[in-house]
Length: 172
Image (cartoon, rainbow, N blue to C red; front, side, top):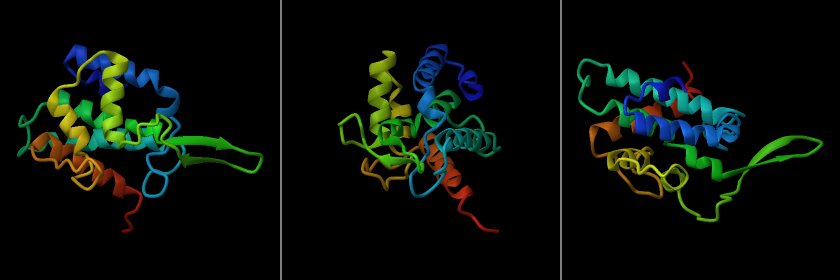
């Protein structure tokens, strides 16, 4: 919630807070990915926090300071992967507990689009167009959305996502 509190637009802040609280049980437990990064229990939360931290750091660089909407970048950084709460299911047996790919909501669409649709439906708040574009393009144009991060805020979120997704995989 620390990053939510940094969103100055109170309407956006309240909507993001409400969405996070409504899905807290999954956001705190789900992995960010099943194969590639932050695959552990709680990985989605850890990855989301890293993307926020990296995004804030990039926005504070002298070259980039004041060049994009901080509230919108933070909202996109928080929301970018939360559509994955529909992508996975948790199973537990006597031998082990594990996550599997599921796409429970039946839409069969990319997690970035899922979070935008769910957010509006659940909160009644229409995300600003640039926040939607940042979320849709956070994978750099390589996802099924084919959305390319073609403005600075989108590039910041996409770069932050990429950096976070590589932190665990880097070997010095």
